[in-house]
Length: 209
Image (tube, rainbow, N blue to C red; front, top):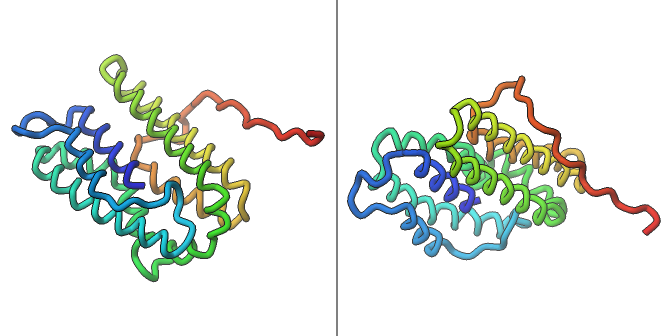
């Protein structure tokens, strides 16, 4: 999850958040924040202990990242970054605060998270790569086209997560989609009329194999 936050900060910085106006500030310094984070299993936490470990890593990393954001970005840049990572912050706040409904629901579904964790990680990785690619081409795109591509990347991410959730119960799959939506809601400002190319169908399993 923290890697998603870090990617959002890189993306916001590359969008012209004012980086470089302060001496001795380099977006690559954020790698130091990653090095400070306690190592946790990749993917979704599968138990209360793993969730707590992820929360501790998140808190450690965000203290470092927030200090960099405050030191290196002007007010407009800070607001841009906070907007980009707002969904991820909200998701971690719900998951890391005791007695929240989302945390309680999450801890009821360890078998689901174990099954879908690799697919979840792949969905997040693909969203990050798509957003990074679009951002790198930002100067060649109009705002409308860039936002449209970001919206389609988010839509593909949601479809990826929905397909992964088919391995779980209906309630767990619904929770997975809710978490994905909170995580990615700030990627772009999308309308319900957004038109995206249909993603390729998932591979079919051979019933005779």
